[in-house]
Length: 162
Image (cartoon, rainbow, N blue to C red):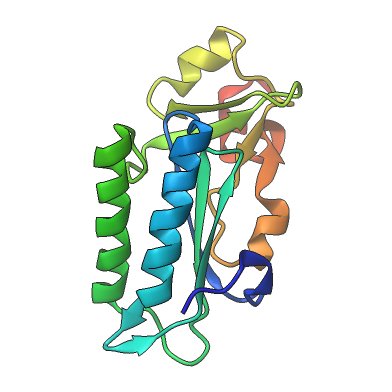
């Protein structure tokens, strides 16, 4: 059962997916339509779960489920991934590959880049200590309050001299 994202409880389980490019307005509308339909029918063993999604800056997708009454089963999680893979195919983008990091420069520019090669980006000055990165430890909606953290406070800090 779909609920607006704002109505999801703070303890809702959240998955963060990063598109490798920003969606156009029409693509973002398609994503919203498909995910609204998916969330409306998302269930575990035939029981509907309160679910939602949010599309941040037309590039970062948040999928949420309230597991307080019934946890998301492996099959229900697989169905969400199938839906995301369908979107990947339609939009010719990558959502489900976890080998990416999202960076936000102080200017507000958002980039999703392969995690491989981060050290070279640091050396080239593309990533600095003030660059914001998505916190990979997000597990609940409450964690989203700290979704962006400066590189200096993240795992990327190890690529900078002390």
